[in-house]
Amino acid sequence: MGIDIYAAWRGMTQEESNAQITGFDAAAGHVGYLREAYHGEPYATRVLVPEAFEEGEAAIPAALLCARLPAALRAAEQREKTVYGETDPLEIQRVLDSFRNFVELCERKEAETGEPCRITASD
Image 1 (cartoon, helix red, strand yellow):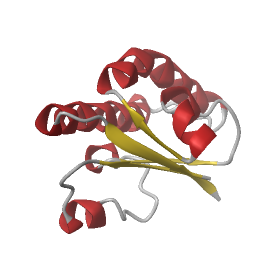
Image 2 (spheres, rainbow, N blue to C red):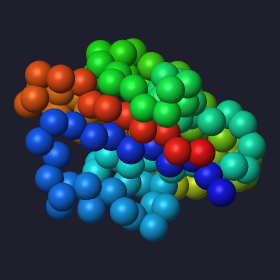
Image 3 (cartoon, rainbow, N blue to C red):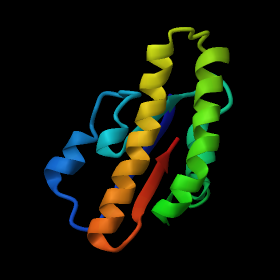
């Protein structure tokens, strides 16, 4: 079991949607997908997109995602170290980059469409 976060945008193609089916890849932020297993807190996804958990889906402006990103990255790094005992800086960076890539994708799609991405949380 885990938390799955999906971004969607106006004009999203079937190919873009299919790219989000990653087999629970924790480093798939670049396609608009984030994953956290239920192994213990903190949950960086809950820091980044709390509205999506409250409503199931929410349009979240990229500026708000950018403002929350530093706190989400701190939570993700803490989680990797304390929950998983991760000490490899490259592995930690891989997870952090997924969050950065997710936010960058949302920024790009908002700039292209003029609308914030719709973020869905499934847990």
